[in-house]
Image (tube, rainbow, N blue to C red):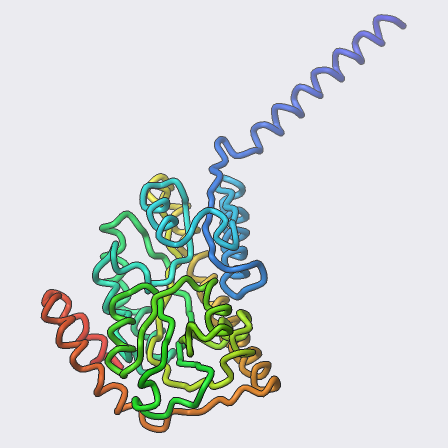
Length: 333
């Protein structure tokens, strides 16, 4: 009886050891923990798409890569995050091309006012050969652009009047992102450009430090700027793409199989983000309209575009190597 019990105990211990070994063998040999940067809050179109990207990569690699998205810019502001991704401290991120110019000069082309005629035109250009040229330029700075997100069309809004002609901008103090091209754009329209942190805009509008700003529908609505600046004019002067970028070091550490998985997940995330963005933009438009915002179409944008010609001329003078890129984008639409 004792011998049988000892035999059963021995068999049980062997089975447990085998089961443990099989469990260990079934786990990834080395699960790569990826950190991802995102400026937006959870639930935002970009945030949802990034979470989908992370889930797809973890699933399709069977846990070899485990990405985690950190929302609300908790890992630093965008300039810091760009540098962290370039040096491999961050593995992936969703970056707007507006602040990318100081690092990747070619991306300044995307910040030229009215470079794109519509959001659909931007998608078509960025998904093709021209978009690959921008990806190549980013790769030279250790950023691998795998897909292009949407950030809608940016338009002017202010506290005083609709903007229908350039003359309506004259004298207005308008917040812009920190980029010389945006400052020159407002100055060319006769306004006073004021680079300022996004988080300071609401109070500055409220106190009269600013008369207006420029942004897309979701940002205008979610920031509550519409409460103070109820005139939204569809100039659509900037249509800036965003990238889902991977650190070059993280990308090159992947097997060819995992690179394909990550690339496909990024493309799927871009499709989802664009759809969610279009839906969110419409929802934001309806919300601000219901709250009394006055939205006006700009019947003739040519007057605004004409004011931008000196900006284009000076840009090409300073960046002659980018002239063909500007011309090719315009010809592709």
